[in-house]
Length: 152
Image 1: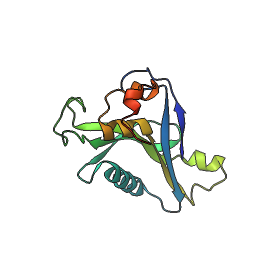
Image 2: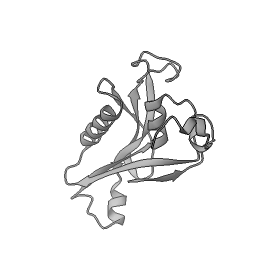
Image 3: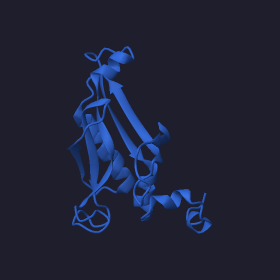
Image 4: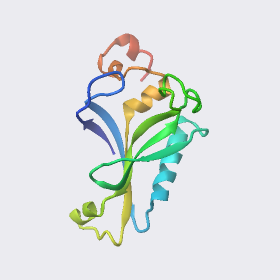
């Protein structure tokens, strides 16, 4: 699903309080964390290239358990460390996790019969990485010089 997301973030070069997000949800019998990681690796490699690595870091999100932030190895320096990745070799992409059993119960699914995972990813963040854009605010300023770089 693609839609607009809102959160309490400062409006700076890499954050916006309103942005567009891709949300993925997979539900079925026997869905595991390994399926989640494999899906994210496949998606990220298709978008950013096959040489990248993916890592998951524990994090809290209210509708998943366990939850994680997911990062890719820096596509600019190959993970060696540069200004784009702040010297870490990693770029954060989004949040993910296994759907919490209470969520299944609320929608009438038996959490013993089905499991699932969910993830989110900002569309502006993908565009920034793919096109080497340093400031997310450029997407919202309607500057024709900036917009003309991207034919319809």
